[in-house]
Length: 84
Image (tube, rainbow, N blue to C red; front, side, top):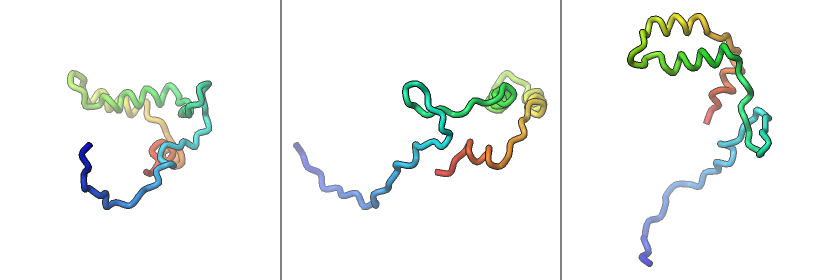
């Protein structure tokens, strides 16, 4: 077996907290699950993901997004996009 002489210069980083989820929902297999969202928010997320999709009128999609927009608190926005 060939030995290499590379030594990693970076410091060791503890990443044990990266995958943790504070939601508290656990399924039957022990995996953490995001809390359920409303139908309205589900429709908004789908529209947001296809806003610039080819074949759709982007002005119509933006109008529909405005109709289905969900008011969220600062805490809800923070929990959806946790800092790394």
